[in-house]
Structures are given as structure tokens and as C-alpha cells.
Length: 238
Image 1 (cartoon, rainbow, N blue to C red):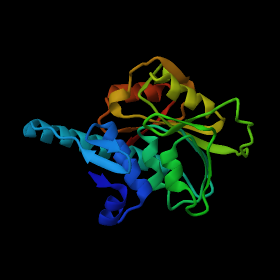
Image 2: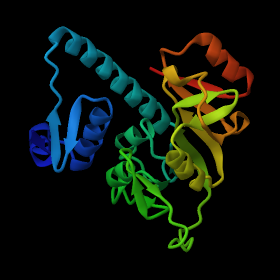
Image 3: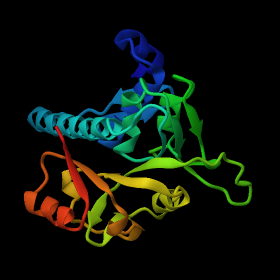
Image 4: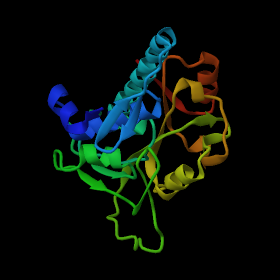
């Protein structure tokens, strides 16, 4: 077991970054998230475990590259929307040197950006849901008192994107994205290459609403060309 405080001291990084990385590693099954920190998940098949660890490291690296490429699209004083997810939750660390107005339903993003460089972080609701730290809006208690901004960009991550649209299998995550369906000038979708061409249960956005798709360098070129032909700008994170 390692506590958040111990990891902060040994690695000299913030508690918000430690919590976000624990969240990501827990999602991949490498550690078990427990109150105040994390503990290792042991596998006594060492050769299998080493192979698995390399795959996990590559997956995390790809997610961070996608997040970094997304953050590079943001400029100072931008007003942006970040919908919580496996990829968007990594964006915070690449935005700390910018001054932004951010609407997000991700507690991980909010914790990273809150009170840094005079960032203004707006949370839309009241109920925290699931491992991604997503806030589900409570219509009975929300009086729509959030400040109204012009949003230049909306960032979402997805587990499936195809000609049928941007899709999710979890209805609560789909609901959270729908509740952040404030109009922005550009919709930017962040997707791992393994999710391209897939479909799922709930359509969150039509493909003709997507302006930019950011993915990793493992993507099939023919699939990428299909998105380009549909008018989506494709960015490969390297």
C-alpha cells in the first residue's frame, strides 16, 4: 500500500496528479484503488505479468499523447468544455500553464485546474458517478445558475465512433455527456485506435457534428480515411 501523501513526497508531484494516475491504473487493473491511496495487484505468472505491464504502459502512454494533442488545441483565455472520460481526464496536466474558462463534469479535471492561473472551473451538477468521477446533473436541485459562456471547443472521449456517430455503452455516461450538450464552435472527439469503427448502445453525437478526431498511431489508415471523407479532421497523436 502507498498513500497519496507518500507518493506526493517521493515523486514531488501534486495530489491531484497522483489521484488521477491512480484512477487510470485502477481502470487498467494494475493497482487497486483504496481510501487514501492504492495497493498493487499481484499476479504470480511473472512472464504474463511483464507482458501485460508493457501493454498497460503503452495504453497509458497513448492516452497521454492523445490528451496532450487535445490540450495543444487550447489557447489562453479559451472557454472550453471537457466531458469526463478515460482520455479527457488526462488533459488537466497539459492545461495547467494556460488560463482558461472550463466547464467540466470531471472531478479529476476540476481538481487539477482549480485555482491555477486564475482558471475558472464550472461544475454542472451535484451527483458524482462512477470511476471517472463524473458529475450527474440533478434536475430537481439544479436551478441553471451556471454562468453562460461562449465555448470555442468541446472535448469528449468515447469508447466507440463510426459513421453512426459517437457512442457509449453506459447510459449514465451518455446522460452526463448529453447534459453537457452546450453548443461549442468545435466538437473534438478523443478516441483510442481500438475504438474506431465500433458501435455501441447510445449515440451521444452524430458524426456530422464532429469537427476533429484525435487518436493514436495504431489506427487503421482505411478507417481514418473514412472519417476524413465524412468531413472530420483527423489528428494522429505522436
